[in-house]
Length: 332
Image 1 (cartoon, one colour):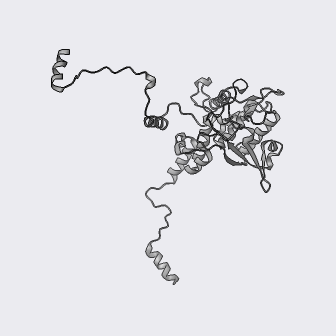
Image 2 (cartoon, rainbow, N blue to C red):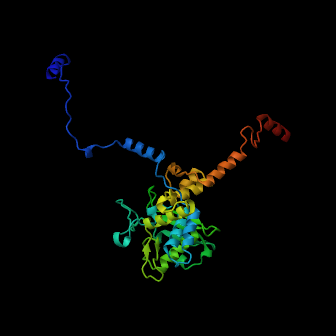
Image 3 (cartoon, helix red, strand yellow):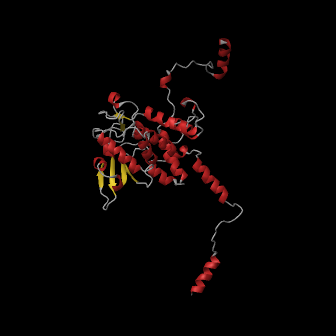
């Protein structure tokens, strides 16, 4: 082999044998940022095997009914009220719920180096909710004042996001009351405010709390695992009763299902992208990945198929230029 290489070298002028590259540790290799972006977007937009299902109002009602007969601030009732509020706000999980017990592990904090807020707790705290009164001039009141005010006197709730994924920190959005109190963000927020005050939680801490036992002097925080278990159980009992155990249920429910459900509500009402982006705090139209084939969209599809007549011009009021000129002459 060496003799042949020497022979070839006489004609090409250099050694053509393959030189062994030095070994480079794996951690020193870095993927180009453009490739990373393409890979990430492709993974998100194409078929994802573990896409979560949206939360539904029936599931929220299941939680609410599970709280009937229990004490006022039980886990089921608190979870139902936060889920109801999330159907309007499109909360991300860490914007209201803790992943681990803060009494032991501390709160989830905003981890960037700078912030205009001294309170770095990521989740919604008592200082992040304000209420507006119905009576003119629609005065804005604090959560503590609202807790002592009758619900019927409240017009809306104003939610502030100290920290957001989209970088628009400190954004405030107002949510008006609904005649249906089971879907009303103001009613849910008012109950959350009452719970925070009655359980004597310290100001500047997360609002998502509950009482484990009636008469207990210590409050507990709603945790991701516990709330997701309640929601998955609701989906199992409502939509997959044929399954004997929760583990057999195919429902894919996480805290993010609440945000997906909020997007699906607006999809079903045929909201345009601009309004969905504004109300649910998106910087782009990537929320379209939350589109699911839910019954409300099936009904819209059926109506479109029923009403459409593609071989006809529907309700066209066409006026030619000549007709416009004739009308102008008649007026003269």
